[in-house]
Amino acid sequence: MVQPVPESHSKTFTQRFTCLIGLVVIMWVVHVFNLISADWLYRFGLVPREIAGLDGLLGAPFLHANFQHLASNTLGLTALGGLVSLQGNRTFVRVTLVIAFVGGLATWLLAQYAIHIGAS
Image (cartoon, rainbow, N blue to C red; front, top):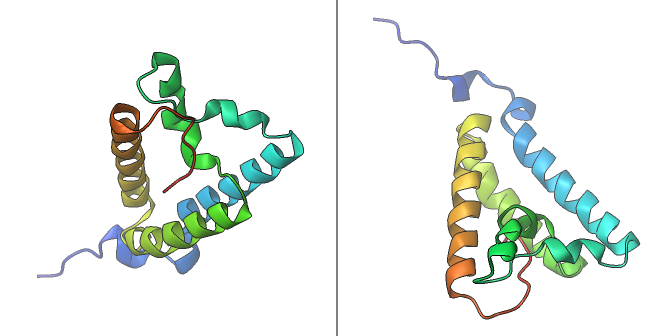
């Protein structure tokens, strides 16, 4: 009996890592824009236990304090996200959204009162 090749096995290297590469590029572009705008985007960070701070669930993963912070998050995201990307873009997107939501919600519920930023 012949079994079909799973989607993740038939993709090229570039196709498997498109979403990961795109996410990393967006993070770096947002950081450069934030520097140019004198940190204007920090207002989209996550603020614990404030309803208005829930916007940070979407914004915080893309914001970083400095290039070292961004580079550290890029390294971790690339290494771990690369492993997930081997299963395909759909899996990468699902896993990334779940991790970002659960991590952001835990930060919103448990963290000290401050503006929280970063993908870590």
